[in-house]
Length: 281
Image (tube, rainbow, N blue to C red; front, side, top):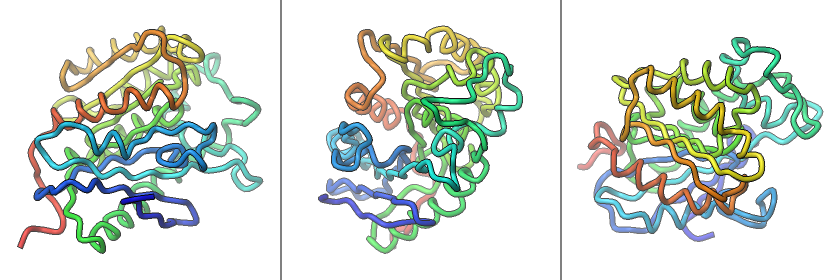
């Protein structure tokens, strides 16, 4: 596909999209989880995609348009019986969740063993450096400060995005969480995960949304708890954006419609460039 570079890290597929606008400054970067669903319908789990390349290309921005990095998820195998559920679940937070609210099996796939810590290492110590290396090879100037780097995901990937912001605020300055799968641990999970986030003084920014149909119907109550906890921490608009999209369901069709809005919010509120590579000569 045009402007998409494909490579592997630790045997896992990574896809890198760079918009073709004539930007002169450093580009921000958004890492998107469930990467097989981002660009190509042929690889998508259910045949629908986020079309992030379109959102990144057509978003209106005064600064350079964003690079999109799609990181494919972990498949269920004998070596990884919990697949994406085990790696996207916030491993540092799960022990704090009320066990009566915790769901330990999703669609027949077990939550355990949790592999979230290993996934965090994979993203921060392997994927991030490799992406930087590829961008340098391509001669693309890119942001390296947290303010210019976002982590995004939907459902379980939304939980993981929030967790990566909480655990690595010096790397990821923004979490874009679509249809966050709070029902993994109900109100207890929403409370504990939000409490683990850095304070607003860190500059962290958070996008939370949900629909009102399908699985998303069950997110209303824990979503309200999440918003309350954000307020207690001192977060307020526009540093945090919480939206409900009436009549939308839990799939890529609707996330695709919302992605340009999330990208626009992210770019409009992004601080000026702090650090970038390679430097201008």
